[in-house]
Length: 432
Image 1 (cartoon, rainbow, N blue to C red):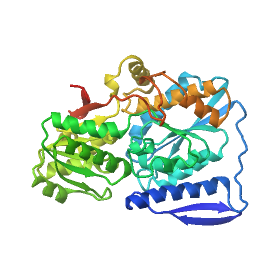
Image 2: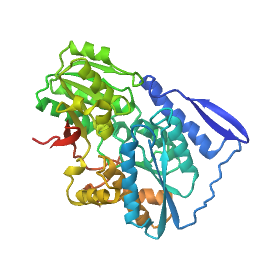
Image 3: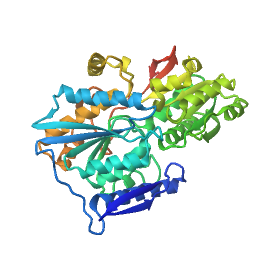
Image 4: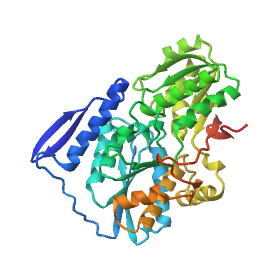
């Protein structure tokens, strides 16, 4: 891929390595290069400066979201965006004395069918260049966050994620070498998330497998940041729990089918296949090919597959009573208190049940509104500080606080099974 920059009428192209397919070292270098290139574009180069004139007025604040609005993730992100809009509508698009304008940006392309580095970079740069934008809600994919985090950090623009779960985005020593510092070129925390990270989900998934009597497991991942990461965490936990790992391989998510792979795995007689990935990276096809190869073992997938699109792509009959799903939080039907009230209001307004991540979109918007009102001024640094310093926030997810890394103090995770074409809650993970 190539990053393009226009300066004094000339177009410059900076070659950027494809982070998702290179070795770990090159992935880390790629993130830094993206940040440097994006910073040059933001601040100007060789006398070329970006105009930053406000057009919205002193009492108007813009909030943007950057999510994959094209491709198979659209059904999930539709409900995230609906959650965001619901929060703004309930507040009459006001936060203190400010009027809120919201823009729904797409970081996916029709050609790719999912997020791309180019689209996410363009969204981040667009937000940074607009002095009226005070908050950036995103991303859905952890790999996309790695691209935009340094860009937004350099500009001091708060990034608030409803769905990223890769631990290395925030937690020192929990990700790849150099994380999360490489995403913070200013040295300051500007990225916050309201969803529990995979350093909880991966190990609790392995513990749940053990409780189900799994003795042998074969692990697959999609070779992307999120999928590869959670699969590795699951594997490490299996080793601690004395679950035999028969193998761990990365699939080519561009492949049309995996029948030969499944035939080979069948010969190893696993009790379970664990797939670290998403619907978009062929989670449904993995399930289909398991069945066609005659594998009768269980399948476990993480929250990236907890969406109706996964069941549709796999075929409900291929998942029934054998596919187990982990999720950071509780599913909509199990929420109580303010969470249950959110689901009721959402259903009344939009005429259908929200997908699992809708409530996190709603919570991000509520945090954004509260931070703006608390700051009391149209200033990125003040609004960021107001968000970070909020204690015991009472939202739809319950009462929680951001810790020093920008993570939520909430740690509840749940497990569901696919039954009769729907996700059916089984238990809160970690509880007996």
